[in-house]
Amino acid sequence: MNYQIALIPGDGIGPEVVGPATEVLDLIGDKYGHVFNYAELLAGGKAVDMAGEPLPKETLETAKQCDAVLMGAVGGPKWDTGPGNMRPEAALLGLRGGLGVFANLRPAVLLPQLRAACPLKDEVLAAGNAGGRSGFDLLIVRELTGGAYFGKKGRTEDGKAAYDTEYYSWLEIERVLRSGYTAAAVRRKKVCVVDKANVLESSRLWREVTEVVSKDYPDIETSFMYADNAAMQLIRAPGQFDVIVTSNIFGDILSDEASVLTGSIGMLPSASLGAVNQNGDKSATQGYPTGLYEPIHGSAPDIAGKDTANPLAAILSAAMLLRYSFGLEKEALAIEAAVNKVLDEGCRTPDIASRNAGDAASERIVGTRAMAGAVLKALEGCLD
Ligand code: NAD
Image (tube, rainbow, N blue to C red; front, side, top):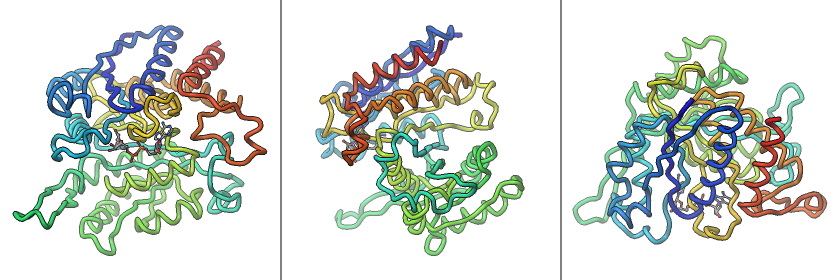
C-alpha cells in the first residue's frame, strides 16, 4: 500500500534524527511491501529564514493532505529574540491546532538495558509496583490544543504586565479524557487525572468532567492527583502510574521529568492524535485526521551537527506512526524489537551511557549515524 508522509525535519538536531527514522521506514516498506512517499515541508526557524514565517500556509495545507506527519524539532537561539508569532515554536502550536491533534500520547518506559542510565534507586523503582514488577511503564496523555498555550494572552499597554489564560471547555476535556481511558483499557486499567483543583477553577472543571466520563469506563480505576504532588510521585514511586491524563502545560512539564527517568529525553517518542483514530480501531485509518509524530525533545542546539544526538526517540516515533495512523502493528513491533536489540548489544549514544564504570564496560558509545546503522542492521535481523 502507498502512504504519504509529511516530513518536517526542522532545526538543530531535527534533520539528524528524522533522517534515520525515514531510513527505518524505508527498510520496513521494502520488507513488508509498503511504499512511503515523503513530502518534505518547511517549519520552524528554517521556515522563518526561507519563507519569512514559522509555519508557511502550504506546510499546514500539505500536512493536512498527508496520511501522517513525522517531525524532528524546531527552534534555536538564532530565532529566540523575534516576536511571539515569528518564533519557531509558533509552528508547533499552529501545526497541532491546525491538524486538530488534541491528544498527545507520551509513553515513558524504563527499559531494563537502560537501568544504569536511570537516576533512581532500586527501592524507588520497586515502590508502588504491584505483582513483583520493577521499574515503570507509564503513558502521559497530554491535552495538546488548549489551555495556557492556546488561551488568550497578552501584555498591558505599558508592557509591564502579561497574562496567559488557562481556558478549557467541557468538550476539550472530555475528548482527551476519552483518549486516556481508551489507552488505559489495553494497559493496566488505571487513569490518574493530574491537575491543580485546589487552586484552579479550570482544574475543578476537569474533575467534574472526569466524574461523568469515568462512568463510561467502569472497569478502569480513576484517581486524581495535584500536579505538584505528581511531580514528586514520579521520582518517589513512578511504578504506581499507568495512564496520566493532564492539561497541556502540566503534561509538557511532567513528560520531560518522566523522560529523565527513562535514561534520556532522547528516548521518548510521541504521537499526537485527533478525533477518530484514537478509538482503538487500529485497522481503520482512512479518512481520519492526520496524526503528528515527533520525539518529545527539542532541537538541542548544544549538540546539533556533532553526530551525538540520540535518534531513538525519532525512530520510535516512526513506530508509533505505523501503529496509530496506518494500523501496521507488526511493522511497529519490528522497529521496537530492533531498538531493544541494539540496546541489548550495548550500543549507546552519549546521553544514555552509564555513569558508573562497571556497566560502562559492556557498552559501546556511538554517534547518531552509527546508532541508526545499528538499528537498521538489527531490523534486518528482526525481519528475517
Ligand atoms: P531540548 O530538548 O532541545 O534539549 C534539552 C537537553 O536535552 C539538551 O542538553 C540536549 O542536548 C539534550 N537532548 C535533547 N534531545 C536529545 C537527543 N535526541 N539526544 C541527546 N540529547 C538530547 O530542550 P531545550 O534546550 O529546552 O530547547 C532547545 C530548543 O528546542 C528551543 O528553541 C526550544 O524552544 C525548542 N524545543 C522544540 C520542541 C519541539 O520542536 N517539539 C520541543 C522542546 C523544545
